[in-house]
Length: 156
Image (cartoon, rainbow, N blue to C red; front, side, top):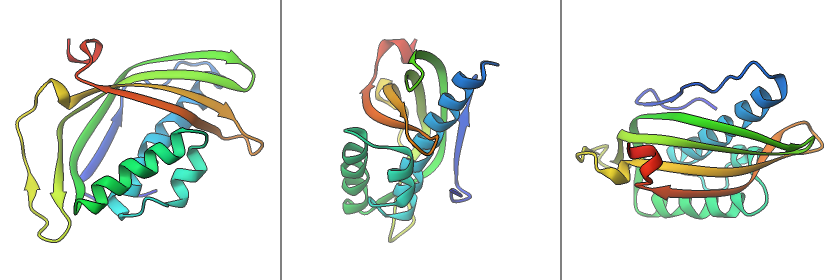
């Protein structure tokens, strides 16, 4: 997945030194990038989404991407993912929570290419809580995804 030149994602502290946790984090990050990629490609049915997401996470992400595309937008700018926490539940399931700083990410009109640079608010910061499960191909798929804008854990 190659994002457009005006879109950047940074994953701060997404390595633990533990091979299993690092594999979980790598695929959790790729699942997030798959959503960004689907938006920039204008494709809610992007194969990248289905590769890295399953369960309730996949239709939820597809609906979210579709709402942005249907509104005539894509993204421009940068998002920083930080304050990541990983828990291994067993050999085939894990949880990852993290914050996203979207204060430098903006909607961009697909037709005019005009970027809507709005000032950041508490809603520019999002907390994500995810569940991942190891599939038969060795991919840690995000199967459950919840997000909360303006969560105090991410705005402090």
